[in-house]
Length: 158
Image 1 (cartoon, rainbow, N blue to C red):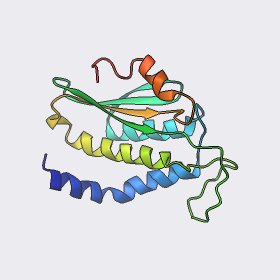
Image 2 (cartoon, rainbow, N blue to C red):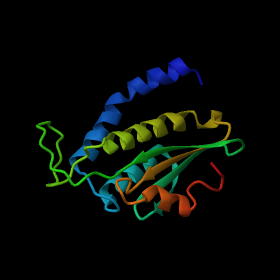
Image 3 (spheres, helix red, strand yellow):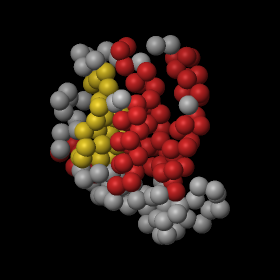
Image 4 (cartoon, rainbow, N blue to C red):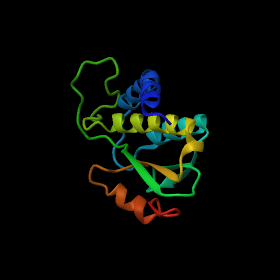
């Protein structure tokens, strides 16, 4: 896989990533309430033909790509929002009173879905395993610890 080619392909799916980010931004969910967010992640993974485990830590998703023979690496994105009223005047502002993606977790999730799309295209060339962790409850809910305790970093070991 050539770096420049992948970079160009990433730029080519920019609008696809931005669309998902804005959809997530409109519908923020607090820790362990990421039902709609998790559904968008799973629907996208289904569309891409990527295998995943659900649920982990209530609303978390663990996707897996690659051939399996070789090292295992993980990429992680947070999914939860904050209990803050959005005061911006953008077309994709939060539609949920008192909740917003003020920390960029909508971006994290959308970017990881973008990485998933690119990695799926080159899956046959991955000499190992790539795990994609879509983590709930980063904002004080210990979602990462719960995903780890539920085996997200094992079989194969990251």
